[in-house]
Structure formats: C-alpha cells, structure tokens
Image 1 (cartoon, one colour):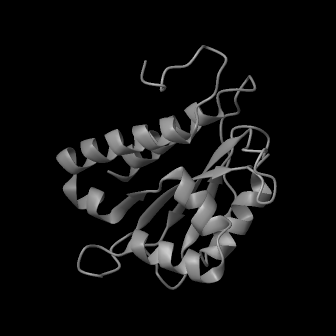
Image 2 (cartoon, rainbow, N blue to C red; image 1 turned 60 degrees about the horizontal axis):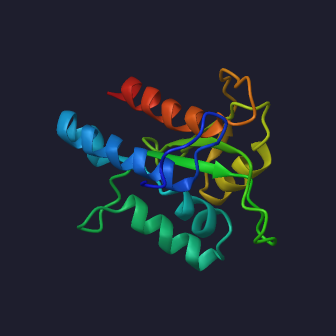
Length: 168
C-alpha cells in the first residue's frame, strides 16, 4: 500500500496534493514548457509552514526559492498555493480544510491573488493572511461548493488543473 489510497469519505492530505502537483508539472513541462517555466505548484507544507507561518526571513527566503529560476531570475508568473486551516500554535490541530490561492504575478507592480474555497469561505482568513504576506491584493472569486465534508482536497487538485488548462 502506498499510503496514497483513501476510503471514499477520507480527505486528501498534503502528500496527495503534492503528488498530484508533481504529476501535473511533469505534464505541463512536456506539453507546454513555456507555461511550465512560469508556473509554480507550491508544496502544501512550504505554503503553510514557510510562507504563512514562518518568520519574515524564512518566508522571504522560501518565496525567493519559489519564484527564481536556476539562474536567480524571477520567472514565476503563476503561483498555486494550497491553503490549510491547520493551527499555528497547536500541533495536534493539523487542519480540516483545504482551499486554493492562485497568485497572478504577470504585473509585478500589482500582483493579484484569487482564493478558491469550496466550503463557504472557511479559509478566507488564512488566504487573506497569505495573500498579504505575498504582497498581493486579494480578489474575490466564486467557486462551486462541495456537498460533503471531505472533498476539499479534490477541489484543490481539480481546481488547479482546470485553472492551469485555462492559462495554456
């Protein structure tokens, strides 16, 4: 067993999302290398612990590693960040909900962030904090809502794939 299989009422964890992001990036590099070079699919743990909860120095360092290419040039136009409601102070509260923050950095002077939350805006506060930390203005968006308590991770990976297709 890989640890990545689930029962029908279990939710996706950070490993599931990261694995899907790795597969999506491989497809993108093969089918649209230009878009792949400008797109970053952020590891959920990096988004949560380094960018959202890390001190300023940690967050800045992580951000620079994300947006800069191998030559140190800022080439990232699109950042896809899974947002978790996991607690910053309680290690036992690992989170119960995922949503997606898409940051559009094509205009470096005024980047915009779009928060896609499939469960009545449960992660709005966390997404707003992350958007502010990344120096972006948060724009409202509407999204189809999940009909149960466990599909939020599916909405994140499917939403990421749908948005990447729209960018291609």
